[in-house]
Amino acid sequence: MESCGLHCTKIENLSVKIGKEDIIKDVTFDIHCGELLMLIGRNGAGKSTLLKSILGEIEHEGTVSFIDMKENKKKKIKIGYVPQNLNIERDMPTTVYDMFASYISNKPVWLFKDKNLYKKIKENLKLFGAEKLIDKRVGNLSGGELQRVLLSIATAPVPNLLILDEPVSGIDRNGIKDFYEILARLKKDYDMSIILVSHDLDLVQKFADRVILLDKTIVKEGKAEEVFKSKEFIERFGEV
Image (cartoon, rainbow, N blue to C red):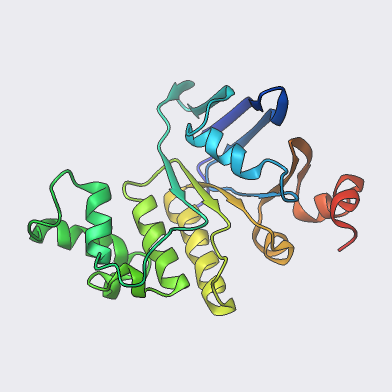
């Protein structure tokens, strides 16, 4: 299935200030359906602030809109999010089912296990090869297993835009390969737009459809090779 090319998320003039200091300023870009946009920048460049702005978690100026170009009108955007870290205690008794159910159901999950909900969650987990984890304690999951579970939660229901903040930190190389194969499937099968923050420039070069170099504002945008060869990139990271 090719990208339909008929949906676009527009980020326009996003700015965040703390006091008089600009944390991000006038960030504007589009991301189309079926596109993996990878966001890079040094520590303190504003990457996490930009993600939180798009998610509506912090006060900001500017707009985030979802455009159906076939109907030529704005629609309410559905955003899925996988954070960089979750503070999970190893001895926490919460299972994958418990965590997933608490996100998608209004019923108190600790009272009883809903058979229909259990089946639905297992089917969602199966899309990510994680159905066998449903009864496992969250604190006992490996890094790769936890990311599969979080991806499954973030895409139920299927969002227009999926945001991932350093999603492969703590995952081994085999797990990283599996993770990016899952992202490729999400792009292809669900026509999903994905914004991913990464510090691993090798992964950026290998998997990104487009790259944004952020330093409080967008200083360079384009294909990975083009961005990596730019003077803006070399000034901040040196030659690769």
